[in-house]
Length: 298
Image (cartoon, rainbow, N blue to C red; front, side):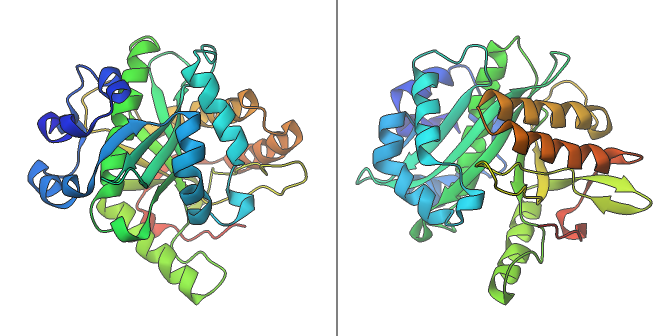
């Protein structure tokens, strides 16, 4: 696998991933990637603020048209500038892994933070956005992005005290969620794709019912919170043993701490956090199939 990706890695990314076995992180056979993904890739990079603004922002905005679900681009760009300048030493690493084609245009990207979990044993890549342009779908590009997200997170976790990566965390729409028949059908298809990729839903179980522990604060002052579903893709790397029952509460705390560190409106964070704390009362953290998720919060 390293041999397949090596010619495609931009210098900064290649240096960051030195010593990491990419083959061990991929869920897809190297021969399939060599035939489907690699021929369409010009380069894979750690995206800086300049290239985000110039190459990736337009695709990001296009793929996430709802402003309530999309973080402002200028905030992302500023965070990237600070990361590359070494000015985020006390904060969770913030990364964008991007793929370009042979004409140097953006194919897709993954935007994520690497959250340190209380206790010092674990760090979790929290994948906020992942997107691939239409003409490059069904070429395993999202799997390349997932693999690179995990690889970068492993490198960052080693620098954070040799922490273990138990899984990648991301949010998604529950199957059947949407404003119309087309969007509801798409959410079902997306859930099936995630299930095939090994994803499981993180839920709170109370009285035999599954409740979502995901409540995203409104991104701007006055915006309402949004509740979808958290999902995890377990890391294929051997590491410290974990159970979601043990990590759930600390994972939630790390998520809200990260939002505070990044300067999101405190009143919005407090509201979202209070909703989750109420959901946690007399509930147990569980992992279930995404196909079993029935809640459709707004």
